[in-house]
Image (cartoon, rainbow, N blue to C red):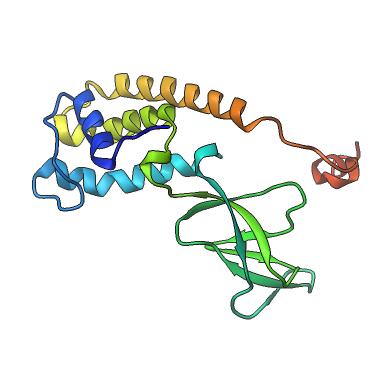
Length: 194
């Protein structure tokens, strides 16, 4: 696990750019503080959304909210609002829900246990994810801070190596997905008449 705060992550990105460290992104004063305050949450959420990071997965029990809606085949689908800190919902075997914006639609009408990639405290970040986030943040801020694109390709290459390693290790830790049911449970097989 990583014990880096958002400011430490931002300072690591700034170090890759050869820029001076910042004091805070929660009360930004200087130009680089304002830039990091703007970019950090966006880049963090973007990187979290790209993959099922083990450290950020949480199962939440949801209850129906609002009026049910009809789907294309006249079934009632109940609305479940995603948690505020959810970056994306993760399908698991047997899931029947659909994502529509910040809602899940499901025919059950009772509670729904759904898995989400969540915004989590930085102390829960995997060290390899933190390195990938640092590289991406440096890449995104490179042109604005350095007033040049010369270093941007090197940062892209650093990010590619870091994210590949982080995803590889995360995949080992997640383990294989369980496949249950017969071939008729998988529409991609039945649609092709296999």
